[in-house]
Image 1 (cartoon, one colour):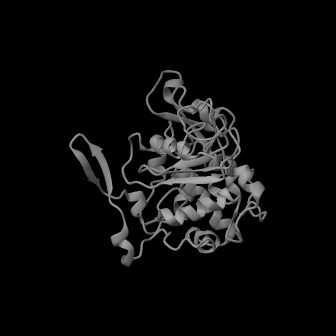
Image 2 (cartoon, helix red, strand yellow):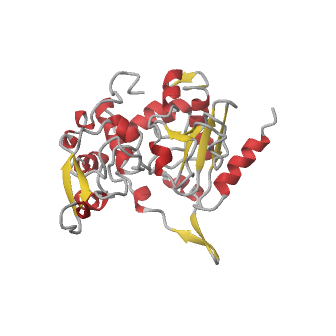
Image 3 (tube, one colour):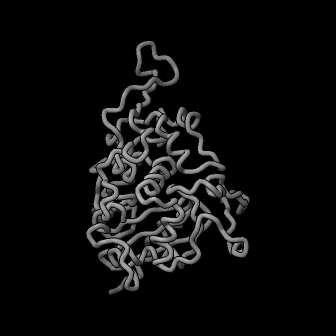
Length: 312
């Protein structure tokens, strides 16, 4: 939306919105240095990280590499903080690799930083932007960062599967925060609400007469932006036939992506606790799975069941 309005460009350096990202460093294992000492040293980044790097998970920002441990000390994600505070602190964190050279998931740091960019570019807090520009126009009445007290009885319980059966899991701290509203997680929603958002994508940016995005913007979202980086980042063969768009993975060739039971051109993503959704432009449909138990074969079984149910 902000790209369409000319307030943000995918090629913009992050420092345009968050100056602390101006002189980013990249962490290198000391084993690569003479003497092979433990720990890391840093070198200057070849270039600044961009909005495109963040939105495609190719920035190297807190993505599980050499710099992530240092980043957790330099820029801890404080439950009582704000996304503005955290994003500014992240600017001093060393990257895990040179920008644009690898794909590695930066689900909290990278996407939270995008949330701060939305705030700076729009003049609204991130939660206000989502409510005014997306949730209310789409009629998503049960989606917000904080659950009203009267709705708490409707909140599902998280479980883990153990050899002895299901075991209760507490709500993770990064979900429970009431002040750090970022793009990486923390929203509460329902299947009915999320269906409105997903159907808008099926319709290429429009729902019930309300247009949020231009059709070409949705097409851009669903295109492969990272070449072979996404496929190469997975276990051997696990991501063959797939690419990565703007926050979503994309099926490039269903015949090659045999472990992913979706049509060529489908795009979507999965959540931390077993949820998943995708949009299938070829079949003009979306599918949403909402569960509260991570792991297991349910996602693949769900994909297969949906695809087999299509007879025309």
